[in-house]
Amino acid sequence: MARLPDHDRQRSFWQVAFVLISVALLALLFIGLGVWQIERLAWKRDLIDRVQTHLAAEPVPLDTVFDLAPEDQEYRRVQVSGVFDHTAETFTKAVTELGGGYWVITPLRVDGGQTVLINRGFVPPDRRDKTTRQDGLIDGPVTVTGLVRLSEPDGGFLRDNDPQADLWYSRDVAAIARARALGPTARIFVDAEASVAAPIGGLTVVKFRNTHLIYAVTWFALAVLVAFGMAFVIHHERQLR
Image 1 (tube, rainbow, N blue to C red):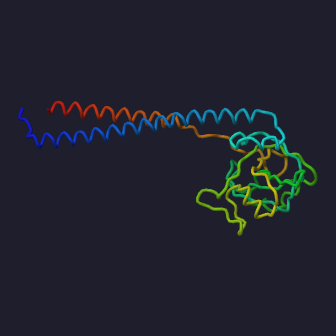
Image 2 (image 1 turned 180 degrees about the vertical axis):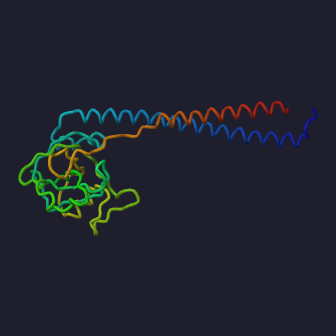
Image 3 (image 1 turned 90 degrees about the horizontal axis):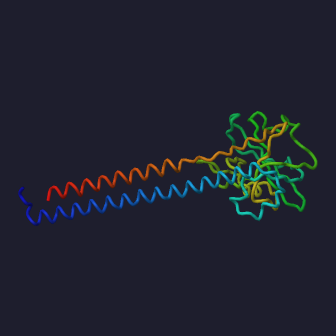
């Protein structure tokens, strides 16, 4: 077999070296992404287990969860007592298993002067007006049982909340409190459980997408393919030499 001139062999060596280094870095990148997905898988499983435990527990007084970290607050079953202020309702866009409409967010005035926003449930567009749901306008002291939810700032997907126009695409507690001049307001809101009157509560969807294992397998498989490609390049270069 004829040998390549020295300058051609040197050029070929550096070309192969560049390819091998690039492929090795790509393999390391894929491995790193796979490891990251494994870590995310562990986090997601812990989250699901924690939330399922919260959902199965008996409701606790709302004020007992305020000192917890946010991730330990959400989806806890709580009870809070107070008086609804139906004059300060806020309607946020909602898409549910019942179709499109609104979440009815009603301030609950509790002892001590604080306000808690209660997502009382869903109403279709034709029941947004209070006169169509008089049976649901509860007067006097009431105890609400529901799930703690974290504030949803900034609006929905590609749609910002517009307090000036009273258009709401997410349940942004701070913005709603400012727009309604509610005064001191808890930083969370509560999704009320099902009730016999409109709004229709108990529609909270507690479902977490968990595809981290699939992604991890995909990244590791790509790393293996890249490793085979690197081995082929090395073998081919040795044969040429």
